[in-house]
Length: 400
Image (cartoon, rainbow, N blue to C red; front, side, top):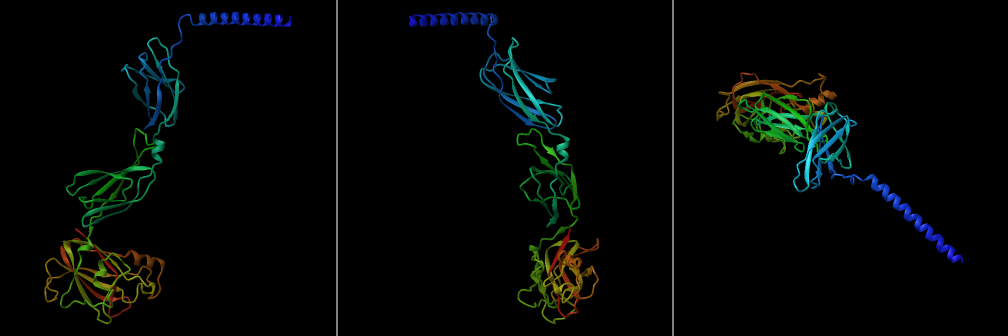
């Protein structure tokens, strides 16, 4: 009997569920009596690329033939842009640039539409626009050194973070303007045709993101190109004339030490070989000299502004081959050099400023009307310690 009632109860429940499902199905059919809701193929793989007060959006569309347009909303849907779509029978990549944006992050909503006005499931992405605030924070790549050597320009660059390079404008020797792109990894730029005495202009370039569509620049900076070129010391050679003092205090103290680009080495004449005395060398080229740098011997520190360091000497020059007899015929005095100790303190007393000048060297300028010369003769007239021999660490010449 119990089994009978149980079967009857289960039958009633089944019939009730069946009736309920039929009613729900009828209600659903009423809701979609005009047809099912259609969703056009949505934008896929959306990317945003930053720019200068603008952003580029790109996306892929499926081969859905019903899609006729794409609409992009931003600024809380107060702004929008519609892009028409032409069916191509296959997936296609599309892009658009949103202009006149504030320098900030922006949210975008992307929908596709068909002719009936049905829209796709929305896609939301975020992008960032950059502008004057970002640009004002950028640093120009510093120029550590700008020099001419053998009439070629050498620019030594410092480092900055995240730059992609530097734009450089210079004048060539004919006066024409040239532009160079300097990669960020290039530390020294060599310009073979730069015009002495002109100016270079440079500004550094940045991308706020590898995908950025715009390059940002620092303010333009300028720098003067030297009027005179450093004469390459690789061309200097020793000349031995009959009246010259070419002795040396020790084997390591040869005349060639004067142009080895090392102020730790020095030319030192033989002990008690006399003052005044002179020596000669060949510049390897003819030039009108503009300036000279004299480095005295600096080690040990006790020798600075003392000992046999040359204090007063003359620089003479001649363009043609010097007289074979070692005479002064046809030589022209170009400069009187007097080394000056910055502190003026007595022998043996040296200040920090004195030591800085020893390392940096003393620079002396030739007269503007000095004649072009190729051979140089140095006549040493006195030393700081009033000795009868002298030492000079390095001589560097600039000319035209």
